[in-house]
Structure formats: C-alpha cells, structure tokens
Image 1 (cartoon, one colour):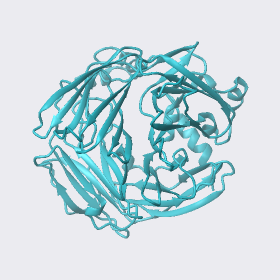
Image 2 (tube, helix red, strand yellow; image 1 turned 60 degrees about the vertical axis):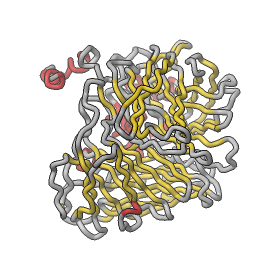
Image 3 (cartoon, helix red, strand yellow; image 1 turned 90 degrees about the vertical axis):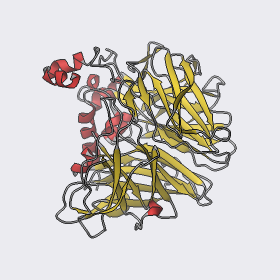
Image 4 (tube, chains in turn yellow, blue; image 1 turned 90 degrees about the horizontal axis):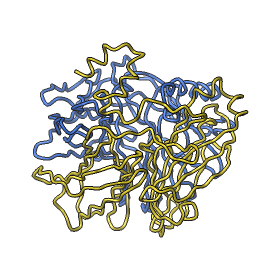
Length: 277
Length: 269
C-alpha cells in the first residue's frame, strides 16, 4: 500500500517524503544531507587488541576515482565501548590504499571499540581534478583484518565495512544512520556445537540502541536471552558458548536498526573465523 | 531485488559450502518470520549453453540447508547455481535460461537475500554472507576491483581471486573471456586468465611488497572473492571486495562509479 502510494508521488518529492513516517520505517539513513564542505562518511569499524591484532585497509577514494595517485590525509577516530572518543591518528599518503596497524597508542590504551575513517584533500587538488568538488561525497567502507596476537602467521582474516555513515565535523562526531521501527535480523548461519561465538554490535547512531538477542532451538522455540543497551557510538560483545549450551540452532536479534548487522567471531578453541552477519 | 546463490570448485583442496536458512534474514516485527521455498541446483558444462538440474532440495524438518562443492562432480572453475524458488514451482531438467529466484523478503527491509558462503581447507575455514544478485545476471557489464584484500603477502601465503560470473538468460553460443591483473600505477599487465560464461575464473597470483594492483575484465561483470591461505592449513581468509559504487555516497554514487570505471578501463590494455 505504502509502496503504491509512493509510486504515485512525483519523483522530485519522493526523496522528501521518504524522510517521514510511515515511508521511512525501513530506511537506514536520513535522506537530508548536511551542508558541510568536503563531507565524507564512514562505516563504523571494530578494533580488537590484546588477544587480537587488527589492521585496517583505508581507501584513497580520489586516487581510485582518477586512476592515479593523489596526496591525502587519512584520519582515524577511535571510540571505547561506551562510545567516548579515546584516541585518533592521522597520516599522509598518496597510495591507492593505506594499511593501518592499529595499536594501543592510537586507541588510548583501550582494547576493544569502534573507529571511523575520514579523509582530507587540499582545495587545490580537488579543484584541479573534479568538475564540481561540492557534488561528491566519498564513503569509506574499508576492510578490517583480525588475527590472534600469538599467531606468528602474517595472514589476517578480513571483513568489509558494513554500516555507519558517520563523520567528523568541528571536533564532533555525527551520523546519518537512524533508528526506525523495530526490525528482526537473522544471520544465515547454523549455530554449531563446541564453538565460542562472539557477536560485536556497534551503535553508529547518535541515540541509545536497545537490542534483544533471541535464541531459536531445535524445536523452533524462540526465547529472548538478553537485552542489551548500547550508548551512542558504543559497542557491545555478546557471547554464545556452545561448548556448554548445545540447544541453540539459530540466533536472531531485534532492534530499531533497519539493518542491524553484527561482526561475528566463531572460535573452535584453536582457530577462529570472522564475518559480517 | 532477488538473488541467486552458488557453490564453486576453486581447486587446491578447498571446499566451498553454503548454508541457507528458511528464516527471513531481515524483517519488521509484524512481518511473517519464514517463507516456504525449496532450492534448485543447476550446473552448466564448459562447452554447453544448457543448464542441467542436479538437485531439488527441501528444508523438511530443519531450519537450515547446507550444500558443498564436494557433494557434486565439479571441474575446477565449474559453478553450481543455487536457486531459491517457490515450493510449488516446477524445476525443469534441462533449461536454456535460469528461472528468477523467489524473493525471500516479507517487507521492504533493505537487505540482500544472502546465504553463508564458506571455504574450508584442512581445519581452516573462512566465511562471508553473500549472494549473486539476479539483476546482475541479466546484463553483460564490465568488472574492476582493487587489491585491498591482498594485504596477506609473503613467501608462505597463497592468494587466489575467484571471479564468479552468472548469466541467467539464454545463450546462443559460449564465449571465452579474459580476466586481467595489472600494476595499478603503471597499468602494465601482470597476469591474465581465461573464463567462459557461467563459470568462475580462478586466478592464482603473487603480490610483491609495496606494489599496488587492480583486477579487471572488459567482457563481463562478476563477483570477486579473494582467498588467502597458508600452505600448512593453519590460516585461511576469504572476503569479497565492495563494488566501486561504494566509494561514493548519495544521489551521484552511480554516476561517479561510471566515471571511475571509465577512468581506469580507458587506461588499461
């Protein structure tokens, strides 16, 4: 019904009405773009230190657009589990990709949390290379790689950026992500016995996020296992240990995020796998 | 928007599996939580333009179905396309075009209809949630990806690009195409691999430290999966790269994707 009504609205007004209820019920982002020069938005990424090492592959979007190296300043902003800014790091590069080895000096000593990537080009470079620099909004989706700290191998297990649209402006953090009506997300995984699952939920919105984690057992009985509250720009680790609990077959979670994904680590006691839900 | 799934034989003792659930991946709370569907499995021989039905699978009592490349007799680079269809849909034994997959959505929630796609070698396993969009299977297109996921470099690390190409429409003849790896800076070709319609190009490659690379095809579009693993089976990493449209946000993202592709493909051999 809503879709049919929307199709009757002239195209130039469709974007405007998409911001209002009930048309925005499943819209993950606001359609209203902030009027900020050199706006660039970032997914909200996870860092894990201590037992894990984390690397991040940052893209130089302008260099990739023009197919030629371009000098830029990469900036990374880190947040602790409560969503408080805990560190930052910046570096200049002209490479298509920059590899950031994240360490405790960058994260203010915090072992787990979220981070975003921002990029800055000089005015001259943008004017010389783009027809209309104000028209372009770069998006940083990047790739985070993780490996066990004691593992001597050089192989990191990578996941791509997932969700965020966060940005830094005037020393503050903002987000285009929005919470809407309640949604239920079920990753396409079959929970296996004798595993430790770690689900990392990151809140890329500027409001408190409530998540209810639901276990679905072999008889298809669904039961809420835990209610989680995550502060704005904060993160939370939910654990499911199937060495001791072998009843869970699938897992879901409810939240007001239209796309409520998580970063999942699956550990069998020796090796781990990491993927986005 | 609906999606195919796939399994592929990538060689080197790597087994590819998918897990798909009957539970709707993303929905509003008032929408129904599962839909009835079954899976058709189709394969195409290297020289043929006909799809042959290999399997028809039902969920029966389970929420989840698992399919593996080792369950089928597949050559290296051969694909099996997994098609979710309505439970009552009649799947023909031999087809010249693939049926459109059923929508596994119950509302307008914005998530692709995925499965868990995993690769295992020995004890090491790595996964991602993925799909092959039906819309992509109807157009020819071009392909461009960068070396973001080739961070894992060094003597004992082996890298593979698995380039999945599915064309669901009728083919009059089977064409041969080329996938290239180039040095991103001087644009010189480093490696070339051949592939056909409805197959996976498997490119084994080495990356020199401090060099940057790109991968492209001017012949077809496709989904790139990067696999890195160690000889001793102690580590395996799998992930796909974002399409170039994801470097941009907002109304102009697809026009900038076109500019980006045009800037690269016009400079590449």
